[in-house]
Length: 420
Image 1 (cartoon, one colour):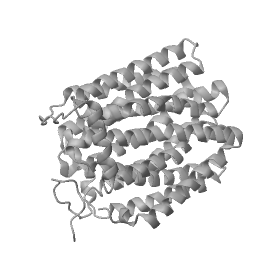
Image 2 (image 1 turned 120 degrees about the vertical axis):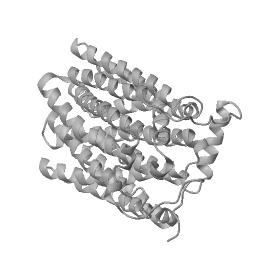
Image 3 (image 1 turned 90 degrees about the horizontal axis):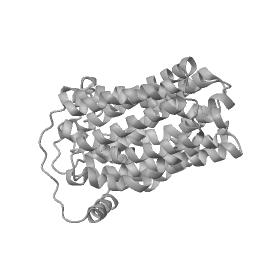
Image 4 (image 1 turned 120 degrees about the horizontal axis):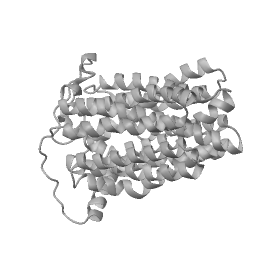
């Protein structure tokens, strides 16, 4: 067997498939702190996300506002994420994340206060979504690049996969709990619990005992370093294509989930609990997929698995768009979530393992910009299409574009299938 394609200086990969390797990164104390602290925080975040989407739809009765929320949170992504990647290569990533996580906690408490007092308006939600986007624009590159400070390189891919496992476990639990909390106590408690959940990850970051890292040499201004990072991404034989793939997937695939509040009411004739179940079903499938990929951390045909996911994701979206009953819709969303994570998580892992350490923050800044910046645009477009036509057509169009892009990648860039 020939060795896998790895970043310079990376150790050789082992190819034996072994489910016992699924949780390999948890042997590192710092990563254990991160995993469980972030899990609590993300569950709260998804409670808020489900409640916030349903609240603004309940106030406006317009699916286009679902797109507005995502669009408002995406504007800072386009403005600040690349610079956030430069900052992540120049300062302590732990200190940067403590600042950003604290900011997000305060914003959740503000939204809770507005909701509890009964004065919340759509513009409040949009403004707070924008400010949350500012914090996330600086948090995302640091968070992505921070993984290598908690684990050794040989377990990096496993840690990236476990991050996705953590994320999707929160997706599986948070929205369902959020929907039940919304129905029983109102949206204010969803926002309050989210604010409290940030304490877990802030404490985890403060307790970590990190190894000393050699500072990255500064050869010029932040703009010069940013241009160097962009050139590195564009000229790399794999990273540029992988980031383009995540952009297309975010633009035309992730927008499906922004329509769930409208889909729950208009298509499935449900309520806020239905909305939470839809999000959780997708999260269950993604959780299963993330655990599967965690066991592929040292496996040799990641490119082929990624190719399979790029075809399965849009095909299953098309199947979902044709369903009208809740049970079959939930089962299909489990499959959608599994296929989605094959695409999203393998792209993330492959980008990180391909990147040189000195460019890691900037590479993940570009990755975060494309990934998080594409989703709000896709949500805005999907919401506008749903407003003018219906939710089903918006999903069908997005899935069709994804399917065409998968075919084009198969035909014109076959080397991606050979990535190991």
